[in-house]
Amino acid sequence: MEIRARGVDVSSNNCGGTGKVDFAAVRRAGYTFAMIRVGYGVQDPKKGFYPYISKSFVPQMEDAAAAGLDVGVYWYSKAAAPGQARTEARALLDAVKPYRLSYPAAFDFECEQYIRGWPPGKQLDVIDGFLGEIEAAGYYGALYMSQSPLDDLRRYAPGRVDRYDCWVAQYAPRCTYSGAYGMWQHHGDWPGYVGTVEGVAGAVDLNDCYKDYPAIMQARGLNGYPKPDAPTAPETPPEVPDYKLMYEAAEARAEAAEARAARLEATIAQAAALLKTEV
Image (tube, rainbow, N blue to C red):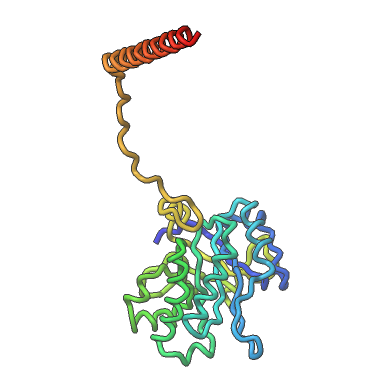
């Protein structure tokens, strides 16, 4: 597949846990987009489940845009049920309202230990919960997963997986995912595949992109972009005034005015005659 763009994905974990990325240097190094983490879910024994917005989110969004990078976002999920996934999606949607996203809003569904015990149907229900909420709000959703568990889900229910644009993580010489995908994360913090780029201290995730996402978002009016203009109706030729009707209407008004004046004159004459008689 043709590589259309190269980019990074970042969070507060980068640059020694500060999240302070020099996006201008990233841009000079030839990378043209950034996927920025909005936040993540929290499973707290006392408080229950709640979404948390990363402190690095707003600075990274603003700095990446100022450097001229195309920007998308992702949410690191900790949802254990579809309802919790929808809560995460709504938190993302609230956070991105001030921005236009030229890249997808992705659901980062990691293959953590607690997820590995889930049946495939439950995993897909959680994925649908998040991405369904994203799409209903007029945003372009994408599913981020590692290649192996993503292929497992696809073997189980290809139709449910293939309906989503996929962002595949696989640290290898090539991506071997069996389905279609729009982005491939090929380097990160992994032996033999440590990602490095000017502007980011330490390891960073590197991605290849195979779709023209900015054109897709603008053409479809997604991710905060205005909807394409509706087809305009053909112009109606200007009406030519009917001067004959205009003249006849004016003449009728004049005649009516003359009649009113005559009646008024007669009334005045009658009143004058009455006054003379009384005298």
